[in-house]
Length: 201
Image 1 (cartoon, one colour):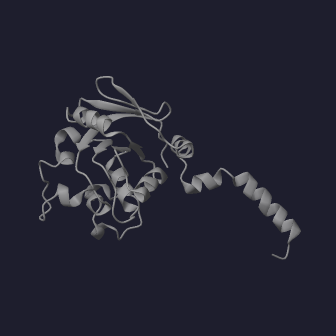
Image 2: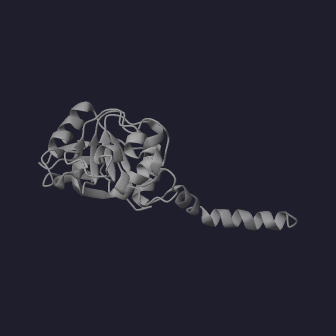
Image 3: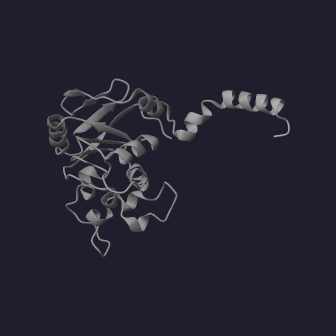
């Protein structure tokens, strides 16, 4: 998993509330277990017509936001079914951070496991970040995980909370497998003792 330390990038405003996981990545794209290749279908039904043409006024189709790495979203982002493909699609598109007033629990947890930082902020702060994001590609925001701050393009700084364990995992690029491998020496030692004590096993 790619480490997350400090990110300065374009923030795309998406004020819709209750964006569910089927809106993030529709069900017809869930046949794969690969984590790559899903970005092109992120928000598919909002980005494209039935003929596959881009919908020009959708935010991620606008030239200013095609390279967005931060998403400023409405409340209850990621609700609906628990598909892990939703953070896979966001990450494959290039989104590394989503900021909202609230997230669905399963989606929130899946983000951390896939290298995306979900940040919960009060409504007034999200409104400020949303307004800043609407300035376009030149209005870049900075997410500093070490300091736990979000800085707007004009220098306003807002602190955020994050669980210490999840912060450790993101800073060090550790998914569940990586966390297990951190204990590799202890696991090897246990297996050697177990083999000596129970050679028949």
